[in-house]
Every structure is written in C-alpha cells, then in structure tokens.
Length: 120
Image 1 (cartoon, helix red, strand yellow):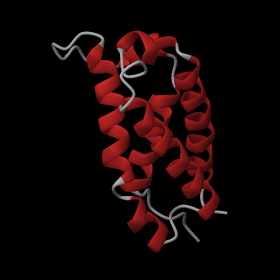
Image 2: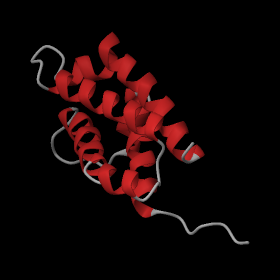
Image 3: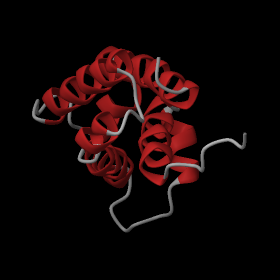
Image 4: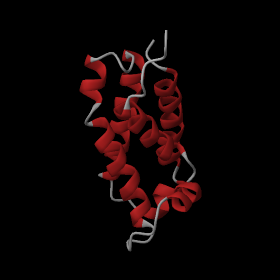
C-alpha cells in the first residue's frame, strides 16, 4: 500500500507554525525584504498563520489533523492574535525577544511537530 499523497493544506499549516517557532533572527533571514523593515517579519508570520488557520475546519473534517493538535494550534493562534492587539507586544522589538512571544514560539514548535506527525 502506498502512502497517502501530501496534503498541501497540512503542509502550509505545519510550515506556518514552523516559521513562527523560529528565533526572530532566523525568521528575518528567511523572509524576503518587503520594504517594511522589521515590522515585515511579524506581519509575514502573523498573516501566514492566519491564512493556514483558515483551512483548519477542512483539515479537521477530512481527518488531516488530530483534535489535540488542532486544539493546540487554536490556542497558539489565539495567543498570537491577543499579542498582536496589545500595543506593547505588537512591536518588532517585542516580537523579537519578549517572553510572551517566546512562549508562542515554543507552543508553535510543539504544534508544528504534532501536525507533521499526523493525526492521532
């Protein structure tokens, strides 16, 4: 029996969390300059995750992601959204080093690994 073909939505979701999980300097090195300077790094990470999370309901319906991984993904996404709305946390400097963003990075790493491991 051959393995299931790759799921582009699942790959996008994992890649979005993998990007969020990286240290800021690694994110900055990976993302192309966009004319926004440091603000562009946070913007790209946040928008990439928002786009990937928009496909979460379909992934759940077709069994592409397990319930626990989906719950952790949602928790990470909601935490990120709360930080983006906090004027003190939504700065490039805070995004790079604040403990709240480091917690988001740690959770994102856990989610990325769970998504890559497949549904359980």
